[in-house]
Image (cartoon, rainbow, N blue to C red):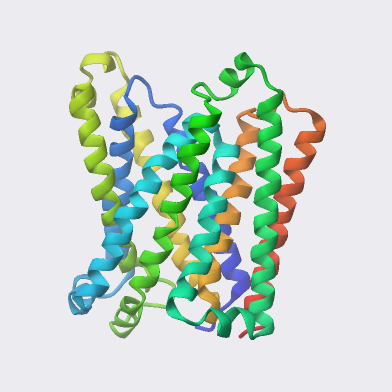
Amino acid sequence: MNANPLLGVLFHWLGGLSSASFYVPYRSVKRWSWEIYWLTGGIFSWLLAPWFFASIQTSDLLGVLGAAPLPVIVWPIVFGMLWGFGGLTYGLTMRYLGLSLGMAVVLGLCTVFGTLIPPLFQGDFAAKLLDTPSGNIILLGLVITMAGIIVVAMAGARKDAALSPEQKAAAVAEFDFRKGIAVAVFSGIMSSCFAFGLAAGEPIKALSAAAGTGPLWTGLPILCLVMFGGLITNAIWCAWLIVKNRSAGQWVGGGAAAGAPLLANFLLCAVAGTAWYFQFFFYTMGESQMGRFGFSSWTLHMASIIIFGTLWGFAFREWKDAAPRVRATVWAGVGLLVLATIVIGYGNGIAL
């Protein structure tokens, strides 16, 4: 199957929608501590969903992983563990800054590191991005993406500066700008390690294709490894919190969770966790369509997440008290991000 960057952009939009939406079900979980619902959803995100979909969509999953050299197995897991720190603090960022501003700060840093470092590390940055018209257009798309992220972040900062403490609490219950920014910076840097994990596992794609897997699905086995690394980090942290807070009983309705709707909570966490996984499910599909500039998928992914995250921010009325000028600014930022995805898709298209 020939690459189709336009289709790839569509897949990345679906992945962005999945990522931007994953935290929404968590908002409806009742009487569960953060570590309980985060780990419950994470079991679906990092363990069940990756192995389930890789098992049904790829050929000889275990044989392919068994044939891969040890470093190709280990490094995606290591980068997944580092990415786990980003995912862990990503949820905290949403709590402290809200969907719109939190995503803008985290994903801005994540975009730059996750897009540029893989080709720099592989030594083909100049050959791919500087020496070809396609690469120049993709770089322009990255610049437009960063401009859109900065505009969205500026709008968020202006909105928050104009709100009273009561209004901030009404929009984001645990709003804390300083704490949120600090967590967001750390989360953005560490979250970019996911892109490094995918790059480290690249040889697995060839093995999977040789086993008979279709081109859309060859990246799914790599997700099993990277997300397992994320599970290790998050499970250790959540386990520590569970012991510290004595919250394990909440899974069966004990302690602070007395009277909690357990079935609804488990279902909400399952939906949230699966949505979190689907961002990367669609990511690998989109990357398979981007041709020789597959690393540009990371920029598309980040831009799409911010677009849909901002839409969710409006849906949850996080911007209801913002001045019309501020709301116009954030929509301008979203417009830039949409333009960026089109420019990057075009750059990949003329490279075919």
